[in-house]
Length: 192
Ligand code: GDP
Ligand code: MG
Image 1 (cartoon, rainbow, N blue to C red):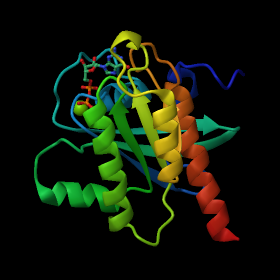
Image 2 (cartoon, rainbow, N blue to C red):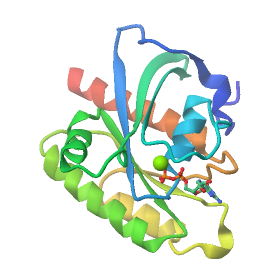
Image 3 (cartoon, rainbow, N blue to C red):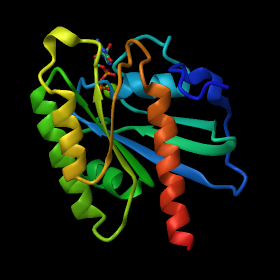
């Protein structure tokens, strides 16, 4: 099977926990309008449900990555309400984080750095997997953040980096496979 195809649907098989009964909580962070819900719906296989401004959603999916099943609970709840309590919950609850900005919006890129710093503060000694995502890579002419800037930021903040286009499904499967691999790497290094 080609592991690099950008359509997520073929790796989505069922919901439930993995072989060890483990469910990995992955939390989406990022400014309004960057594409968090679009990415989440692709992961959840429900992208045809129109672009509604639903308050918040959680997607429960098992995916096969490197011939091994992983169970993911993806939380798209960062903007569910404006309470400080929810933001703090989000910062605490994740086993892994996807911090999204839009490559067409410099302010959202700056916000992503801020979120990374907040996350580090909230989870000081923990080595949690984080992927920085520059979404909307299809909007070439309105790009405000270069690939190099994104990559450099990820180096500074010690996290992984990928550019995606939710509209074109570009790199979306790679993103979710990447987060599973990151979770496994951290878990393996803890067990040694
Ligand atoms: P959220 O506020 O972070 O959840 O962002 P949404 O997923 O609601 O997306 C905000 C808007 O950006 C919607 O109109 C989406 O259709 C659009 N959008 C999301 N991802 C992309 C993308 O990769 N490319 C383009 N061109 N538009 C996108
Ligand atoms: Mg949303």
